[in-house]
Length: 264
Image 1 (tube, one colour):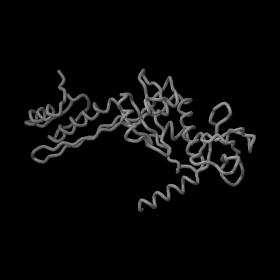
Image 2: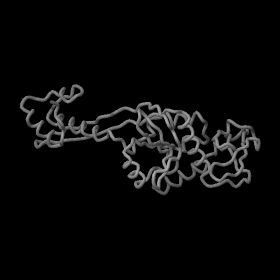
Image 3: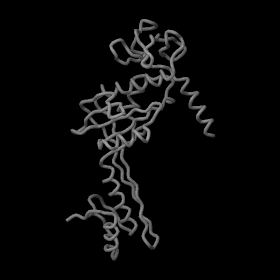
Image 4: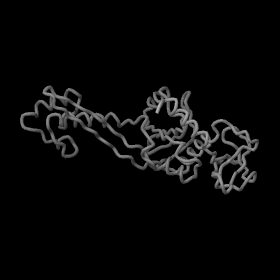
């Protein structure tokens, strides 16, 4: 499919997204399923502040509509983003993404060794959670702490983290990842839909920065070197490699060349 056709399709689907969340007078985000019908919902738009009407009919999916009937640009997406941040703060835990490192190494005679090292996704309990934390010119969607160190979380609905923000967040040195919500998944969103996507689904999150990534990269490089010489990895640590007779000195030379540290 041509690029302009894919863009038009995405815009068409986004235009059909219902506004599923509003904000109450005390600042809490609520689902259209949580409130009374019509103007009795007592909610405002998270983007423009206009009063909302809870449409809870029998034909179309339940949703909020602006009282004026005009609506505002990005209201549904903005409300979804606001709801996701509130959910993260209140849940107190989130699935951190898997980490992966890939490497390859080819010796002079053409033999190739390839390795992939994966650290699985894992549930992180968070404390000291806050929304919208300013760091320089940037704002971080959610900041918390896990095992005593800061964790930065970005939620992407229509805009992913750009290169400038990625660089700024990486320079902070704290684990930072992005959760991407696909607005095309649902015409309208319930809390349960959002909980699954924000807190539990492993495929929609990726690391922006993790201080342990270089160590994982080094492990993959070392495995690739050993495999290129026909070695078999029998488990960590590196002492468990089985190397063919006559290849030991060449393997050690290659590992020294990439900065691997030998155990003593």
